[in-house]
Length: 235
Ligand SMILES: C[S@@+](CC[C@H](N)C(=O)[O-])C[C@H]1O[C@@H](n2cnc3c(N)ncnc32)[C@H](O)[C@@H]1O
Image (cartoon, rainbow, N blue to C red; front, side):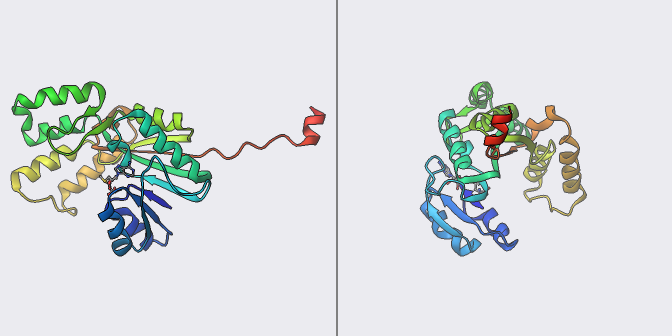
């Protein structure tokens, strides 16, 4: 598997523990140094838009981060087409995005919306998905679910799906954390209810955008078989 934009190796670690052979790419030198130590994978410094991997060389390519760090659509398509180039025919590409509605839901949950100064930035990112980083985080692009599906399709992937990751209850968890000052324990009834809500919402596409993150996936189409000489003659 190729983990592009693997950060500190969060996913590479459990994938390697599950027995997958993982290679890791990230443009941040500290991450590329850290990942082999924390995740036991091989790693290189690199950019999703210009992968060094050979054509057809991986079973799976993960892009769990780069798309929202690429505000220009052309750059996101370049990254997806690179993933498609290096995955084998029939192989899987999975790409994460931040939902267009995540900042609104987050600012509402934390009470930050009470400050009218926040509204301008929110209105602007709600309108076109682009965020210039003026309120923290970084310059980014926030996807609508259909946006992500279209980009995966335009890059050439087939059998495309988009799922919500956290479901509609994550703002309630954020608000509870804000009030108590501690993270909701993952074995609490409240946390488990949030997971149930995520599962229930999954079957209802209009609710996808209520997740903070979206996970899009698709397969590289298998090479189309050319008609054999015999069949061509018969036809
Ligand atoms: C939010 S982190 C996600 C890390 C990890 N994949 C995870 O899910 O925990 C986004 C990662 O994408 C990386 N990134 C940003 N721009 C990138 C690019 N053009 N090509 C590859 N990775 C990129 C960042 O350095 C960062 O490590």
